Length: 398
Image 1 (cartoon, rainbow, N blue to C red):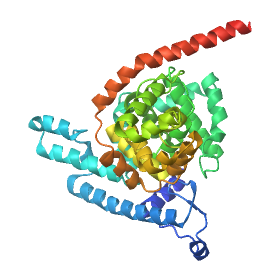
Image 2 (cartoon, rainbow, N blue to C red):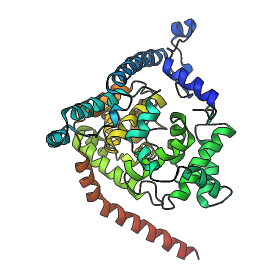
Image 3 (cartoon, rainbow, N blue to C red):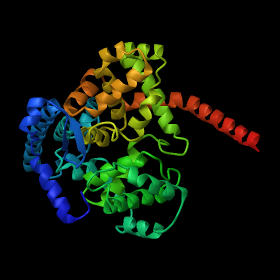
Image 4 (tube, rainbow, N blue to C red):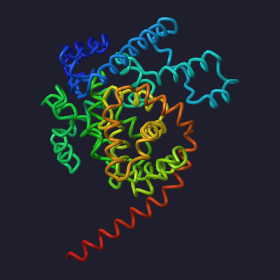
């Protein structure tokens, strides 16, 4: 995790043991704010209730670990790499042409992933199920090393922005905020900016790539996870210059909020609150700046298996969990404060994901795709109008 084998060994040993957090006796009595370090090295602030929640979550993680290891022992180390089925309906449709064991494995896997992948298994499971391993296998083995050497020393608008953002990416982290951490993050981001010139670099990717570096076993694996994320998992054009894909996602989310949480949507519309006040950070950073890191990893567990629709489930769940509070809000600022406080203290990923998938209801990838196609013309027209307006201002300045 932290660049050298010794540090990585310590990290994975730490993750596999998953220690309980123990605030001091004085802290427990006073019930004041405490600071502690999470599994990925981030300093977290919370009260004793938060610590208790995290300890309960970590016990569940240990239980999940035992389940995964038992499956590996009985089904084989890579049992989850059998043909995948992303939904029950798809499973029924394909049942006639697939072995029942494959269908059972797919349903089991979906349930298991929603309950969380053990931290020590997360790198290999993500790399396999996301499609990153397959993507890497299509190029020469030296691809990443050749790429980083070829672009070394080259200066572009993307590299300048990356250099500007490196010290602002999770400042204070014990590895990311070091020369070694900055160098690794820079190589991944600069390398990808040359791989895909249409994307280049977009602010938000620094946070995503940083967390991938903390999870994956190697810098190269983090690069391929970033590649599969941008090229296969997420919607097209989310990180291009005009962020058109992100604008589409916001409009789709607004429609979904009205459908799934009509009382909240109506109240927020009356307050003239727009989802663009919170959604860009959620969708561009994939919740990495908003949720605690251990909760973010659970969201990404689902993202890499079920796809981008899971981001809508999670975003809707955040609103749904605070429905009563939001309905009492009188100002836009109150809404933003409620949402920020909620996300920053969502230490229980099971609570979040239960609401996201059990209470929000189903949303198929096909339905989301239709919603995107419906919104795309309006977004492109709006962006085109904005561009013409900017160009006219430039002419006037001359």
